[in-house]
Image 1 (cartoon, rainbow, N blue to C red):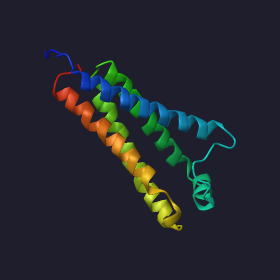
Image 2: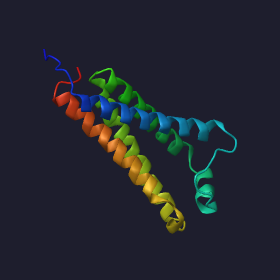
Image 3: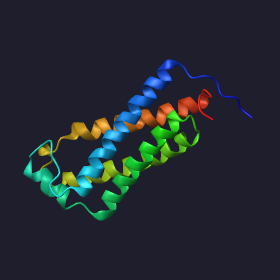
Length: 142
């Protein structure tokens, strides 16, 4: 049986930042799903048309990635090892999501798509993945 060691202050700071990111992501998902005309940060007609025509499985994978990432952040703050498993599952779903996004927007004029958002999402999900596994390795979560 492993014993938990007290995590340093940086653990709590990073955990809460990852939770805030996940909650913001979840908020945008709910707004985008349940609002008739969700607020958009770019009024690019090509991007909006492409977003309206995305397949249902893609939206499902996106929702699954966001929900598992948020659950992973919550379990990380609760210091449970299941956070590492959920972060891994969320990362796989994000990779599927990103791969399809790059494929779908390569069919239209991709110079009009804001790729920075995609890279930020990848960065935060990769940070969640590495930090949960690092916390598990350091016995900060059990």
